[in-house]
Length: 393
Ligand code: SDX
Image 1 (cartoon, rainbow, N blue to C red):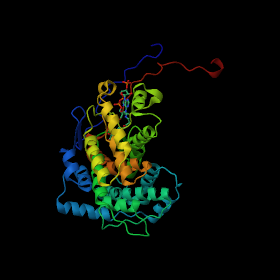
Image 2: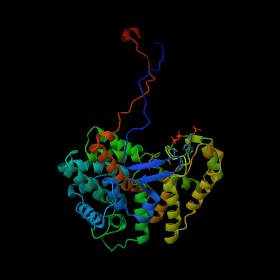
Image 3: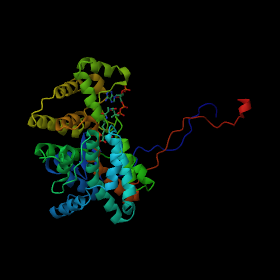
Image 4: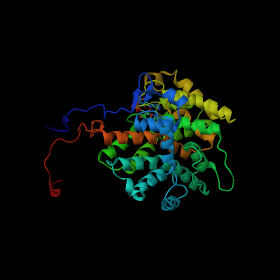
């Protein structure tokens, strides 16, 4: 053995785990949660119903959904000391950093629900996360605005409660816009799970060491913040803003992408699994037109996005590489029209993805057959060599 001999370290399996939660066919552009096609759920279900479906495996009856909702309502408020912790973060802290820190801190405030085997404790940590993540997200936004926070109002549904805490102020009543609430509920459904993506695999991997649910979800939030993953929805808006500002026109920008100038990518395009149009992106594109029109928002960046898509779907560079719009391409335009600042976009992705992360973590804890494998590697380093003392180097 001389030089860099590549040592055979055994098989490299392609499936990191098995799971019964979400099915994706990347070539056909199919996505199903527990067997239900995503377009049917996006059209006819609610985010809370889909959260129940992902976690428990079945769509709830009316009674089951009411009970689930009432259990969540019991936990929407934060421990007052946790509120103080959030208040201590710098005003310009990125809300994704606040979110992951706060979720990690839940493990210190709620030590009565850290078990990974006690069913009651797993249920309690599940409810606490589903109920508190929207409150934490709203508080992070308020902190960045220098505004006072509002306590949750459990007379509202989860999404309306979140919108009121995010955009309402103590000095006046806040009417939730039903158009915004319905569209955000649908966007949360579209983000709720997606098989073994970067952040879900992170949640599983951290949980595979028997770390508790708060620790595993906090790690997943960090993974999601990356611009190639959940951070892409913000990066799309920055890209559209760059073009709108006239720094590059659409054709110049697309040539930069194709020439890989400065590593620039067409953000919101491409996918590790979908080599066809992301079924979620098709739904989001329709919702973008509908919401902007209903809200009376005329955003030139929507035209730019459609122009970029039109070019990409015909250009050999993108067609040969099977690059299509993914879920992040149009979502940012809707979030902006709703009034969210760009740095909150990935936080919205996290709120949507939370039930999927929880469902996948619970599946792994309940069924060892679905545990994630310890990743292996192909060793490409030095072959064995003998130590040489520093006086001889
Ligand atoms: C999400 O996994 C999930 O399910 C994720 C997600 C979920 O719901 O959890 O769907 C959410 O993360 C969606 C993806 C959001 N990210 C972006 O929009 C960022 C831009 N996209 C790329 O970074 C990229 O497409 C990835 C990372 C998403 C996927 O990359 P792949 O499939 O591994 O492709 P690759 O990096 O191996 O690239 C293959 C070729 C390369 O060119 P060549 O070397 O062959 O010449 O395609 C090119 C790449 O340069 N390419 C792009 C491109 N994406 C890939 N070129 C320009 N623009 C792009 N966006």
